Amino acid sequence: MKKVLLVTDGIFHPPLFGRWALHASLKHLEGFSFSHVSSLEKLPNDLGSFSALALHYHHKTISDGALKRLDNFVQNGGGILAIHASTASFKKTLSYFDILGGRFIGHGKVERFKVERVKVKPEQDKIFHGMKNFFLYDELYIHELHQDIQVHFTAKHEGRNIPVVWTHHYGKGRVCYFVGGHTFVTMETETVHELLQRGLEWICSQGQHNASRLQETI
Image 1 (cartoon, rainbow, N blue to C red):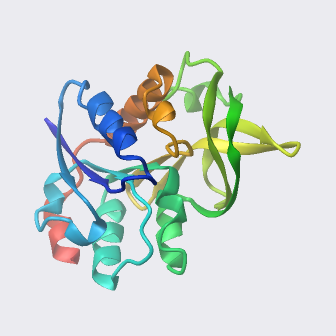
Image 2 (cartoon, one colour):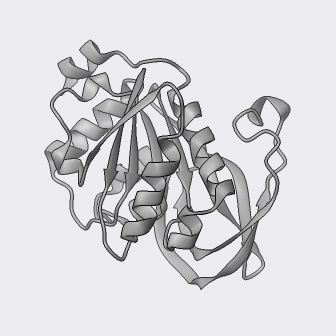
């Protein structure tokens, strides 16, 4: 059984009902168990027993201790499923964005837009294989991006292809980011449920990270 810690918070941004929808969709996955805290400041002492963290919040500051624990968790093989405003949090903490693979710099208006698959090599297509283009009614975030991310879905904004889903390796850990999550409608969408479920399975698929090593580095 792979343990996942949902780190989620918010009433309007992210929307409370959208966060509930996230919880409900992920809990359909077999072989996973879930628990919840409201912020990275409340990460439990036994973090090494978790396979992944799901981040869905919009917070302004993070302590050095919480950042170090997050960094150690991913460096040692823990997974991160990051959603929407997780990349708009902790704007002055640049090392946080090294973990996620991108940093929020702006967004379009809330509107309906088409999300399209990116053509990649067959060996890079295993995560979202068979998934088709879809539409979202949401807020499209624009990011500064690390060069080593793998983009899987994009949307058009002012003539440019903007990443909607990317994956990223950090140390021994894996990260999957999804740009949607501003609206409850997004988090109720079946295609989004499938996308997040597949992302979670991928970040956890390399097996349990080394818990003893993690505890040594905290």
